[in-house]
Length: 405
Image (tube, rainbow, N blue to C red):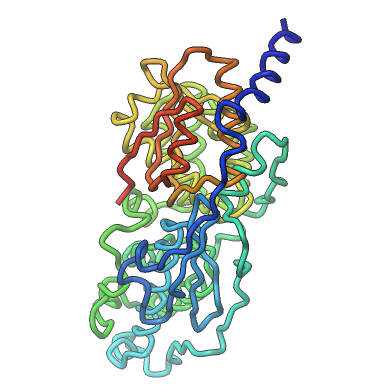
């Protein structure tokens, strides 16, 4: 029986490309203006997004010039998160330069907090990468490539410097207290230390920012749904809740360990993602967690967290996600009515060789494992006419879902 199934899958793999029009031309993703995706936020008090946004066929790639170095941020949502963090940096720097702030500290001998050009960082994001972490995930799916385990043995020690004041300050600014972005992480620590030493409450300090703290706070914060926990709980408590949430979903401890030890996730990511998965309550959640634990870049970890949030928020519109399963290395869902639902919050979709391979392989396995089934490709991004035509030829129904705010 195993040999027979293997033969069927092999035939399907060769037959599917023909039925999908293997000779059909591929397309080169178009370069589009960054403002189309980011609106007026392309320019901020301490950054400027370069005018053109490249694409790998799935996610947009943005190059951002800052006083702290030039960065490439992958994906619209990830870029928006980083721009919010840069806004928060600007607010903290503005606070540090305020005479009212220094006077409010109530310590004449206290040295002013000075931020200058001495904090130029070496960007951790390599500029001009051709693919995002998400595209690399598609590329490695089915190839048996697993992420090297990210050592988080010193998790508690590495976060001991994140004080109560720092957590409160970050939450009030609408950013992750455990951010890995060097300009913000450094300034949060410095300002929180100054405010704690001077006995200045966080809200009082933010009120002293010339022009108001509103310059740093987006109308929708990436940490808004968990702000009370992030403000009041220690990292160890956040990880403990994450473990508890995933254990309720019958995820094995060994899989949970790999996730929480992956340093591409912050404690905030882990908490928010586990809460979203608990809200979904699908069977075989271990399939999702096992895949998420392989995230080998920060943008991919953020993508996995946002994917969990999106599935939780749009569960009803997706037909009710009853279980997780894998197809050709990709995590998909089975809805309550038995339909396959593949949810991918991509920016915009072009019919590239990478996408073609992913759809052909996934379709072949589904055709073998679930003959006669219905397959829904649910995405938040625009699908090019060519991509839509080829995806439909492979038997998929394209479902547009509303992105998260």
